[in-house]
Length: 296
Ligand SMILES: [Mg+2]
Image 1: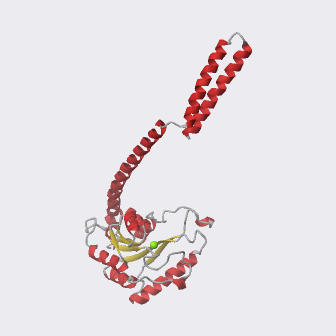
Image 2: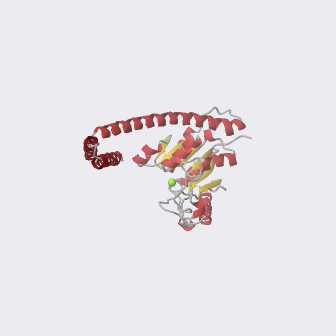
Image 3: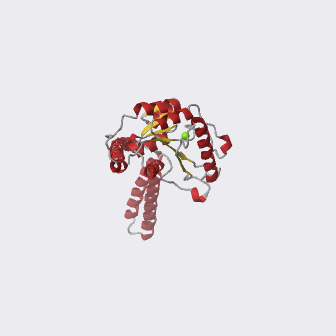
């Protein structure tokens, strides 16, 4: 049995217009070019899978039944426009969010983008060829999840900040352009096309993932070292700078030394020795407190 490639699709502002939490199926509006693009991708042999974060469930804005209703409506509109059945084969969504208000959904989850959980689960469930697959999304977290899963990524955006943050393999101005990129680039696999079923599921995507991860890890380590060096340099400079508290601490140490000397001069008089000695200890303690405050 051969494994097929897929196009993983972000939902909000990739397939449908949605700037907020959408829990009402009657408000679903497909974006321009989406049905035609999906039809062309299906005709080219790609399986279509939606992967969407739905943190609105965790925040109590709507429930999972509302998410399902929205997905049924999307499928209905797409199928009506393409004249095909099950144009989009599956919808995966992540209802979890670490800052939710509904207890059972309030946590981090491996399915939540930018993590690659939904893509990897779909690949396992549907026997998909990840190295020949693509992801289309409008946000950096989409492309990050695709990159971590080992698929090629296409960012649909005209926003220069997003484009800079997303590190996508390709950038498209709209869905039509994104679908065209998939069709043009589909024969440029990252791994040899004669991969067997088992290799495709386990070896090929993993191998590519490791290569990418190793490059990324080296880059991250380099950046971390540079940041640490900068931090140490500024910390050293900061320490070199004199501060009023350091001046006070130095003065207190001198006072402490002076009073300690007095106390030793009065060694014969026990009362005077104790008085000057206490003053010396007190001055030293105050100096230590001033230094501790200065370090913070
Ligand atoms: Mg989106």
